[in-house]
Image (cartoon, rainbow, N blue to C red):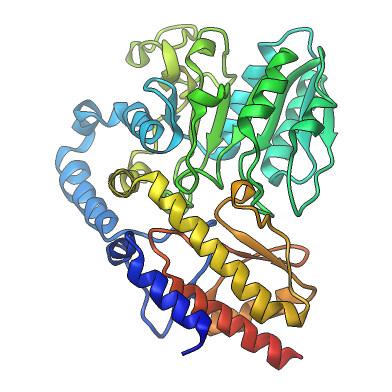
Length: 408
């Protein structure tokens, strides 16, 4: 047994979260050897399948439209409060589930810039996820704003000193990702918030690659607005609804632009003119995606039981192990690590870079190894702490090593 395999075996034996792997639905062994894309789409839970069947047969099939008065209408806020408590460091009444990440970014960013009249600049970075950049480009065109771009190294991410050099009395909003989607860089939210607030700007954070993987303290850090998805580390399923956080002190002054009936103070009055609901519910627009919220019940139960701090501890061990495998096995083939090696600055995934990686995707998949690929030449390794073992990481990167050897 090699030292690296022996280490994986020992880490698995000592892993206090190892038993959680048995709670996930598994593909046939012939089809899946190593799933390393938990940072793009989390695996489904056995409990999710049971909940979905129960919901369809008993709640939807049995109660039909009466289900709305059984509590469905409150799911966006009750699930939001649970998510806030378990994973976001947010007190009740500040988090809501609904819409897609893109739509929620638009809602909150539009509300934020409108709440800062006389300020005409929005600060963002060049390597943020495309939807964040595209939405802000559209809002800037709508509202006559200037976008101030911070050029970020794809190997790292946004630094406080970069923010300090561009925010000023004209800045309405800054928007960055907590964990950079390409490199896994973990931003210093608290310090960046302090800098932006000192200039009178609002702060907004994309939590898609950190929620459910990295401990988050939105209230403590003074975050104004945040958005994130639920289908990565939160295992909500393909296209699961996103979440939005709006700090309580801002809820009376920010008005989101998509005024739908569910965000009305009395949805079923069907009256003339839009009157926003009090509090976080005003962020809702249309009918909530109830069926799509069912999986969140199962995963939030599991995450509450496991504990986000314990998840983070294993995540760092997993990504440390990925780094060691990359250094010993892959570096000789010209593979470069383009993620932070410092734990305090690293999220839940590691990105490897080498020209020609795209050609290896099909043989990797054919071998039952599923990483993620980001153009132009990045292979993201995203082990999910509750569903991925160290041995599984070893098996997956061993296949990558062998393919590189054959390619050479």
